[in-house]
Amino acid sequence: MGTTAVEDTSFVLCVVDVEVDDTDKHDLKTVISTKRLLRLMIKTEGVQTDATYKLIWHGYPVLIFGSSDMNRGFYPFAIAVCNNETESDFAIIFNSVRDSCYKIDQTQWNPKTLLSDASSVITNGFKTVFGVPFRRLMCYLLVMKNMAGKQRGIKDKDKIRNDIECLH
Image (cartoon, rainbow, N blue to C red; front, side, top):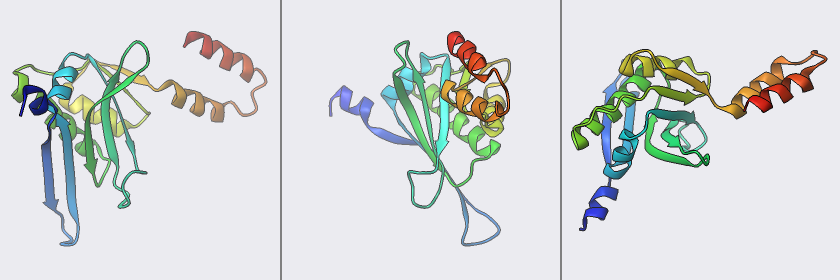
């Protein structure tokens, strides 16, 4: 295989499968990426992450980690599947990505910006691994959606929305 093929070969960064009290249940976390994607991620100072439940029929959250460029193009760096969405789950996943970056490039990945929804478990998992201070940003579309729900009964809501759109 050529160098490019090796760089693009996916590999598992982390698998945690712990039996819990009930023998039919497991605490599962799996993180997948490639060497090339992790090397690109090391160059970024920010990370975007979110979970969706619509990809796996088991209903497990699929977590995407990536970054955007100035043209608003999104570039995924890693994908994770876990059967919970807790602070501990995010801490384990963030830690496995950080440790894998170091193993590949002997470079400590320490992002200073986190962009995601308003989930406190994502924020606290990030804080557990990378510490403080860091910038916490929220997706513009989620802000606008949440704001629309809070503006019921306000007369000047169009002016408020316009002001926020001007800031964007």
